[in-house]
Image 1: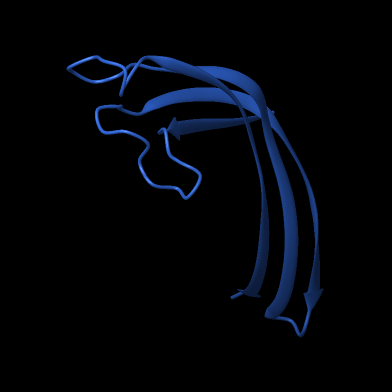
Image 2: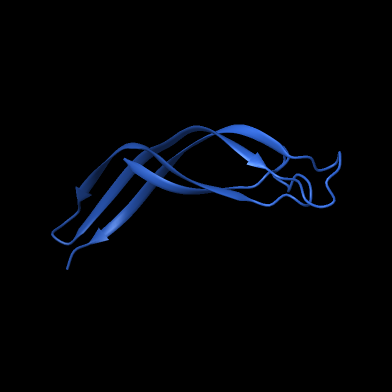
Length: 96
């Protein structure tokens, strides 16, 4: 079981704010994490590690409320989105 607090803001296809007047919304989601890694000891104190994790928080609906004045340029709207991402980590560990 994995938890995430996701902050969502409307944006266009280039990543710019969609229309002025829309705020952001946040959702706390439960999901899962699957991953694995390896670690190699160079000596008694130093090791190298590599890890990959996949996080998935499912598909859910999000509603946005247009700002004032409300008109055809900033109407209320809702979307369905899926929150998932991958992380990779390379590390050097030193043990005292």
